[in-house]
Length: 191
Ligand SMILES: CC(C)(COP(=O)(O)OP(=O)(O)OC[C@H]1O[C@@H](n2cnc3c(N)ncnc32)[C@H](O)[C@@H]1OP(=O)(O)O)[C@@H](O)C(=O)NCCC(=O)NCCS
Image (cartoon, rainbow, N blue to C red; front, side):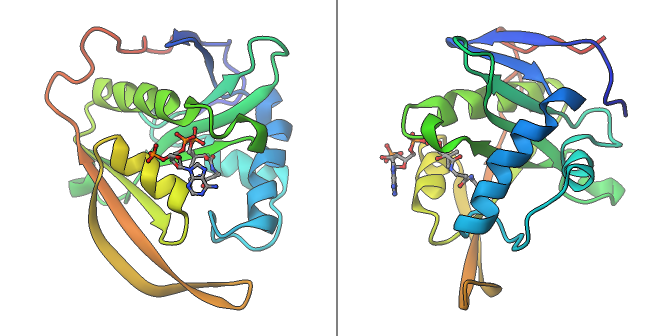
């Protein structure tokens, strides 16, 4: 795990993606904390600090990475997405959780689908087999994106969250990555 390696850049379907670096953390934090305080997209309730965010986006498992999508005009972070281990137990070795958060002004433009597909290709290239997304049931935008991208609802956890005085359900979405899904457009390995 390192927060200081050289930039790893990818051009992908009109997007400019980079593997997350330390310098991205303040912008990522601003995006995430926006949703923490204003939505049920995440079950964090109190705003995170930079150390907590560092722990969320840099992973001990070297196959698990986070990528930022940069606005080509400004170079600012328009969103980020990545994979983390679903569980540290060995038999879950090929199962990852997917995370994606776009800046509010980057939503509704088809960016989410392209970023997600990039992450899936990356995950397939790392040998992951199953991807899971845990989505708050009332997060229609996210649920709709995952459905459209071929994820299937695999179960509903009832009333597992409480935020803004409401009990919240979580829907587990799952996508099995096809063998060879990484071929062709697989993002390159990092050095
Ligand atoms: C969820 C997210 C990644 C989706 O990316 P996006 O690029 O905005 O996705 P889209 O614009 O393609 O919208 C996805 C779907 O939601 C629909 N949608 C758009 N605005 C909506 C709204 N306000 N309410 C409900 N649905 C909405 C779109 O019509 C689209 O539906 P379709 O799949 O049937 O065409 C992005 O909106 C985001 O980062 N949201 C905030 C953080 C979040 O919820 N992250 C996911 C946590 S699990």
